[in-house]
Image (tube, one colour):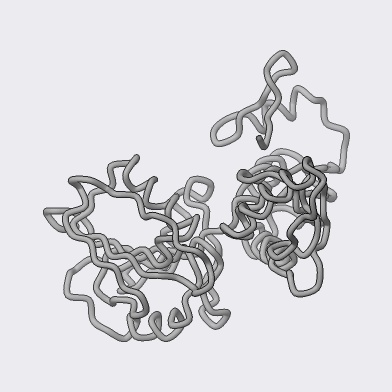
Length: 296
């Protein structure tokens, strides 16, 4: 760490995820010396980038090239030059003593990289060992929110009780499909209520007031997300817990992922023992007298 803070690069800073990341850096008072933003994949409308105020000492925006000088680089959107950039960064010598870290937030690392997903607040000290201490370049793959939720529940249950099987349903919001999908969900809702034709450019189907297990031909992004979560669960859980049967449903919600998880244990477990096993950060148990969790 330098005296003034860290040099941070955000690839895809104007995407929904990139904008959320920049807001989180501001809220957590991340010590920034220099912020570099890079445009992501073409085709998605740009969103205004949050201003980090006085802590944003220097800001440079790159449209195509990704700079190789950084302490932390966050990948918040796909980029056509990402694979070659990682190779170039891995070859170059770092001027400072500390290792550089590339954190993939959206499953864009090339398959050849073979980076295992990591959840630091679940793994604890094990993360440092799996990251390979002493390396000049640390590559970290952050799993999808659904992967984290399922892993937190299953790993905690499996540590106390033998788990026979599990079934998970993921309720995916429009934001997973990008800004155009959010806009189309709003237009579909308004048009249906006013008895007008609904647009179908983003989903290929009517999503308003509907649940879709599959989108139309040419709209396979949701299918790819289901495959991603399944692959991440298999890699992350390993032998700690069985990988659940999985189904992703596209739901008419703008933001926030929800899921339902059915778990079958080898032996019958009292409900009170389940509460004891699950309760505790990052999991919060809601009593029947409390307001139930909601995706809205």
